[in-house]
Structures are given as structure tokens and as C-alpha cells.
Length: 298
Image (tube, rainbow, N blue to C red; front, top):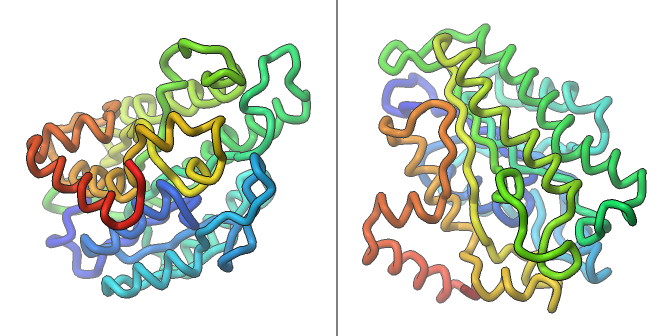
């Protein structure tokens, strides 16, 4: 964990895909817990994003996330980055590093490629989509993680925790198991599963290779989350909208995990199950109720 009490400065977190959804929920929770932020994504201003499933404007932006995080006392910087622009991934990290005065303690790999094709079976998949999904969901986070790792290994370890940096990878059940239904009928596509499976292996391998050098890396499965895109996508994702939790619940789980020394390096954690166990049923249900009252259907 990053022990905020043992740093002479506030810890800095870099969160990708922080304009809305899970990334935004994590960013705001980290801001509330004492982190300064560098947030990245494509949507800078409100109303400029389009839901590819509906063609409608999608709520959420980096500017809105930054404004809310600053209200919690966090210093927030915005860096525009696109996971499909592989030539810019490493350069975008160095922009993040420069804007944060050369200090980033926590990387949250959350951004993925979102576009048409995730509900298509493999024989009908556009070859270009195979490339886009591979680049956005696996290659881009690998390149970003490598750049962050090189920075972290060159940084001094926390004298109290012996930790140099933490990497949190927002993974998916799709990377571990076969869906009950076909793609297009409530299941996920082979390409989503394949790229998430590859992404899923980053955490335990980094823990294996660099845990002894002060690098902590965890897989966090958020479970079903009622993000802005899910709520706007109608019948196709209605089952997620009906059963999913608000993104802020995942943010709360992340903060809890960062301060939990009992979670082993390289672990796979289901965020909702973990938070319920950590807080107890009553407190967890209270959080769900508060999220619902804040306007996020559960």
C-alpha cells in the first residue's frame, strides 16, 4: 500500500479512463482519501462523448471529474490520451510524470477500447476490430505499465513499507471464464475475453518479477457496475443496469484495498465481495443505499 502518513508529500495517482464510470469513481474516492491526481482519457469537456451503442451524447468528462476531485482538496491535472494511439502511450505517461513534478505512486489501469463489435461472434468480427481491441485492452496498458514500472524502479522505496509503487489493474470476469450466453445475447465476445485474459496476467507476473523490489500489483474485478454508458445503452445492457452497483462503490473498494496489508501481492480481488466482507453487511448495504439515493440505479 501507499502509506500517506509516511510521505513528506501527498501521494499521486494516475488513473486512465477517468472521465466517467469506474475510472471516475476511483478518482473521486482517491481524492477523498488524500491523493493528488493525474487523470487521462479522451473526453475533456462535458457533452463531447458519444455512446457507440446508441449514438447519443454520453455524460462525463475529465473536466467534471477534476472539478469534483478538487472540491475534496485534491490537486488534479488532466492529460489527454487515447489507448488506440500506441505511438503516444509512453509519451503520454511522460507528460503525466512531468505535470506531477516527477512523482507518481499509484497507476490505475482502467481505460479500455469501447466500440462496436463486442457483441459479435468471432467469425463475424471485423479484422480491424481484432486489432483495435487488442491494442486498446492489452498493448496500450502493457506499454503504459512498462513506462510506469521503469519510473517506479528508479524511485526510492518508502522506508516504512519498503514499497516503491502500486499498480491496480481493473480486470473482468471475462478474462477468467466462459459466459453462459453467446455474444449478442447477453454474453461477451471472444476478443473481449482474449484481451482481458492477457491483461489479467499482468498483475501476478509483475508481483512475481518485481515484488521483491517494492512493486505491488493487484487485479481488481469490479463486477457489474451501472456506469453512464451502461445506463444509456438500453435493452442490451439492461441486466447490468438492473444488477450493477454505482461506480463509487468500486472507488471505495479500491481505497480499502490500498490500506489492507493482508491482500497478497499479485492477488485477484472481486471488489464488491471484498468490500462487503471488509465492511460487514450492514455498512455495505448502507453504502449501496446512499449510492442509490444519489441517483445511480442499483
